[in-house]
Every structure is written in structure tokens, then in C-alpha cells.
Image 1 (cartoon, rainbow, N blue to C red):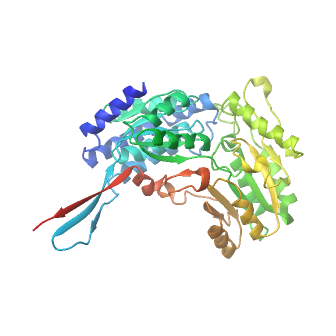
Image 2 (image 1 turned 30 degrees about the horizontal axis):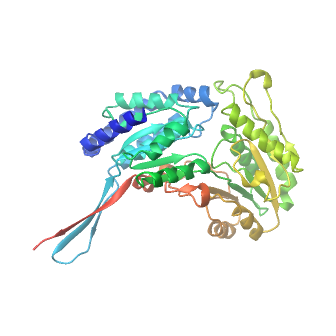
Length: 443
């Protein structure tokens, strides 16, 4: 199946039915795809909820947001310029941005529709053809996207979907000599395998977004503690904590730790657990038996190390047959503890007290990851110092986020073992383009 899909993508790319088509044609097709996605947004959300448990009530990274992201890349495709360089009187030197070719896109199960568009949107806008491998746990929305792409007028062979196990389909894409680029989102362990596959095959470009252990850093300097506590709890509850950028480490200044813990506990208690397809549900099951077992293993190992949860710490709603794990908070967690160092990918929060700014920075930077950090402070100067001292991207919150911010134009590049390459925005579109110079000598 992978050979057939890659062959179709290669033939479509070499024939130029997409890469050499007029920008206006590609733009119209991607806009039509976005319109079709928006019209079926509720159905796409239901497909994802039924397969992996993301509540249909959760708006973060839902199908409507994915349609908006596709529209952004439809508009962006003709807005990445080339360069013309100063040269001598006998030459003209320009640099073009050209598509890379066949892109293998491997996406995880946590936000199936959105993660698919995060890859195929910029890849298609850049003129590439794509072979998309969705997670075996959540492939139905990806298959539907391919059907919608055909209805939108995207030519045959331009977008291909191959469901299957990662060790078979993902590995085959990584090793395939006719694949020019692999873009991957998932664990750090598998991200490293993708780099290895590229080295074993044709040295294809590899872009990865991998694990995270993002800190929420809360200072006692006048910031609204109720609003901050509610935001920390909401982050942990979103998609049951199955978010790569979830703030799973709460670094809180010692003077306010008891008050913050009390307010976070109260906010977590308001979660409505239930079936993901029930619109009143705000907290669904984990994605699979394996993921449930993984999260529970981390919780039990923390207890074995002498840490006791102040909230949660066990399974719940066992009579439903769903993989429900209580939102869980551990207090006074050493920064070196396993649950404070490793990505759990579930609703588990490690609360780590600190005394001063310097200690907060050391703890924040003290893991192998670097996706994003969240700083809560009412002091502008402190916020700027923290932004410059923390390795990863940083959100400085003097108040909770209330709007769209920069929207889809925002780009991000991880550090450490959180990945390689830039995703999102115009810079993320450029990741799917290579630079070709054209040097013309003339009399």
C-alpha cells in the first residue's frame, strides 16, 4: 500500500498536475477543501471522538479550527517570495523557493483532524504531493479528508492516505527512496527513528515535533491567582492532558503554593466526565488501553517513590468500560522525579515549589524537552527576563489568554529533544520548500 501511494504521489508530482499548476487553481482547490471541512466539522469531530475520546465539546484544535488553518495556507501559498541578489554587470542571480517533492506526513492520534491539516495544509500549499499516515487509533477523519480533497478538485495522486501501524507504514515511509521529506509528530523515541530511517535511505529531509514537559511558572507578584489556577487546570483537562504542549509541571512560588493548590483542585473537581460524543462532557476517556496503562504506571511509580496525590490518582467510571483516569495532582515533587522529567501524556500535574526567579529558570530548563513554557507574572521586567532565560518558546501571561493572538501566522521551533524544524505560519510553509538558486551569466 505504501509503495502504491508513494508511486501515485511521485507520478503526480513529476507530471506537475499540482506543483506546476497556476497558484490561483491551487488556492481555489484548498479553499474549497476548507469549505467542505467546515461544512462537515461536527461529523469530523464525531469521528475523532468515537475513535480516541476527544470530547466533541472541546473547541481546541477541533475540525472547525482545522478548516481555518487550511484557509490560512490556501491564502499563504502565493505569499512566499523568492530573492534577487545584487550581482555584477555580467550576471543575474535569483533564488527560487521550490517544492521538495513527495512528502510523507505521519501524525498522532490526539487531535486527528487538526494534526492532519497541520501537515497537509502547508505541504500542499507549497506544491508538494503528500502521503498521509494517520494513527491506527484514529484514521477515519484522515480518510474522510482525502475524500473531501477529491470533491474539492485536488488532482488524483496529490493527497494519499495510508492507515496502518507505525512500525509498518511509518517505517516504510521513512525508508522509502522516493519520499523526499518526512514530517512527523509523535514521541521523541519514534522521532529519532525517523532520522535513522533517513540516514539508512536517501537522506530525506526530516521535520519532527516530539515530546514535551512544559512548565507553568507562577509568581507571587500580583498576578490574578484565581485566573491563573483556572487556566492551569483547564490546560490539564484539555483532551485529558493528551497534548504535547500541556503544562504538566507547575512551578509555583512557595508563598502561594497552598492557595494555588486549593484553587486548582476546585477547578478540576468541576470537570464533567463522560462519553466523548455527549456534548455536556468536558473530560473524556484516554485514547486506548495502552495509553491508560501508561498513565497509571506513571502514577503508581510516583506513589512508590513516596509521592502522594492531593487530587485524583486512580481510575474512575470503570463500569462504563472506558479508559477514564482521574485528573491527578502531586505536590512537592522533586524536579528530578520521573513524573517531572518524562512525558506522561495524560492528566497528571507535578507541583514543584521554588523560592526565586533563578531557581524557577533552572527547573524550567531542567528537562531534555523544549516545546513551550508558560509564565504567570504581573511584572513586565520579570516576564522579559524569563523569556530570555528559558530555552523554549514562552507565553507571558499577565492575564489569561482571551483571544486568538497572532492566529495561524504564529510559527514555532522546538529545542532539545522536542524536535527539529519550524511548523506553523509562513515559516512553517517554507519548511516544505527548498531553495534553488539560478545564476545567469550574460554578455
